Image (cartoon, rainbow over all chains, first blue to last red; front, top):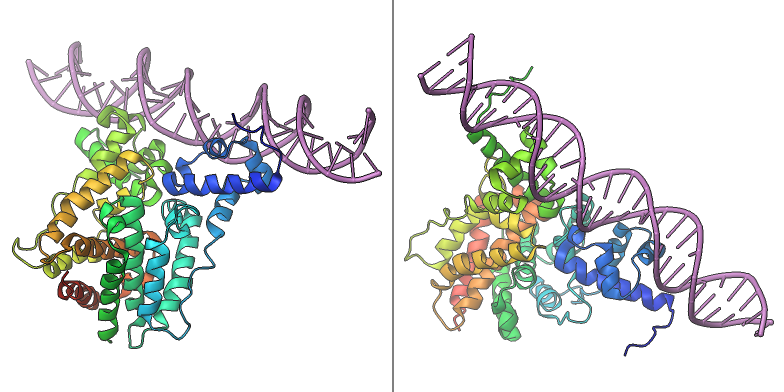
Length: 190
Length: 190
DNA sequence: AGCATAAGTCATCGATTGTTGACTTATGAC
DNA sequence: GTCATAAGTCAACAATCGATGACTTATGCT
């Protein structure tokens, strides 16, 4: 049937991390128990504390892993180019393998104050600051936040609400329409 | 100090509902315990089961109350008019009294499958269907979903992420910018 | 083969959860 | 004032939660 599963610390750790990402993404921090996560990974629940210290530490590591990478539009490109890159990353990217986007995972666990604070730091400090720098005009921060709201909302629509329209639509059409919305913001200078 | 608090079934029920709305909005379904809610309302926790049956029933009634009302743009108005009305309702409206918008409350409890299903029904069946009917062109549903994503994202930005930009910005400026984004969608017919 | 070490398991703790039933106390009709 | 009824309280249940320490078993080196 199934192999006796050799003992491999690294493999067990990543299996735990993968299962945690999926469980946290679907059920949130409170709704995902350490026993469920361990069962998904096929190991004992106590290994979570042995390898990560606590459930909070596991969560922190699970949502931290692949946030840093991602934004890869030229530093001197306009806001539309960055928004387009983010649309591909957050909404259109095939996340079947690596699980949900960390921002959406955190969003579903925003009941915890620590998670909410980190989510705010991540969104405001990283994404919105980068976006605002590419707008010129008086209220660049407000327009950057509207772009961020559009992106976040698209992710929520697909991941949380589960509307089929965005998922089944032609990606090129989605990029074109969202791009038109961002360009409208560029034209509306303060 | 405080009045001995006369026994009043109706008053206790509404106090419980108000406290539940606040707790559920801030901590989500799992993060808000019946004892916390009852303590906020200043009554005993067992009254929740006496008056509502179960915690789930309390949640259902708490988020159901004021959803139906709200959308009040003319039936023949364009999508921009409806979007503008929704911006005022979801984002700019002063919710200090009545608590957070039910959609955002549900969003923070979307770990539960039943909540997620009801959230999808509410968003798709009510808001998006109304929006899509006001777009003409081929992919009206996709453009309606992008408007919905923008609105949902703005609510998430303000309520969950807690970014100060949207809250402190001039409401008229917010309406103008979001309106420009919706109008860009109107021009981009399929 | 033998052994030290690390990987994995088991039993269990205390705290908290939703929920129930029996009990006490205030209120309004007569 | 008396008393039935409803409103509110108390104690406790079983289940589940995160977490700990002692225990067992496999692995790799010699």
